Length: 184
Image (cartoon, rainbow, N blue to C red; front, side, top):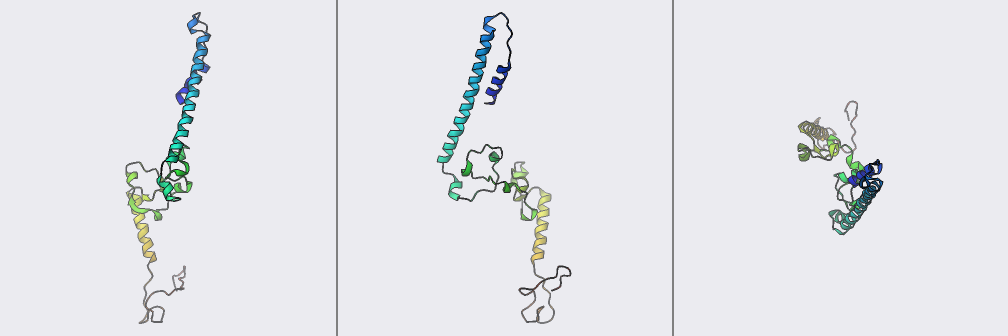
C-alpha cells in the first residue's frame, strides 16, 4: 500500500515535456498516472479486505481469553499500542493503560526477568520481575526490611509479660504504638 501510494504521488506530480516522440507524450503520462492510481486503489482495497477477513477469522477461533472471561494477561499488547490489534476484546493481552504504570519495587518479585536479560522485556518498569542485579538486590533488601517491621516487638517485663494479665509477651489487640516514641 505504501509503495502504491508513493508511486501514485510521484507519477501524479510528474510533468512531461513535449519531446516530439508520441510514445513519450502527454498520452503516455496520463496512462501512467491512471495505472499508478489504480494500483494504489487496488492496494487500499486489498488491505481493507485483508483486515476484514482477519477479524472474521479471529472471531471464529476459540481463544483462551474467551474461556477465561475477564481474566486477561497483564502483559501489554504491543499491537494495541500502535493501533494494529485486530483481536479487539478477544485479545488475550492487556489493552489497559494501567498495566503500563511503573510497579513499585516492593511489589516486584525477587527474581530477575529472563526477558530483560535478553533485551526483550516489553513491560518496562511495569514488569513484575527485577531488571538487573542492582534492582534485584534492592528488592531483596526492601522485602527483608518489610519482614522485620512486621514482626511484633517481644519485650517481657516480669513473669506475666508486658500486658500484666498473664497472656504472655507481646501486644494485645487494640494496643497502639506511639509513632513518636514507640511507647504503648
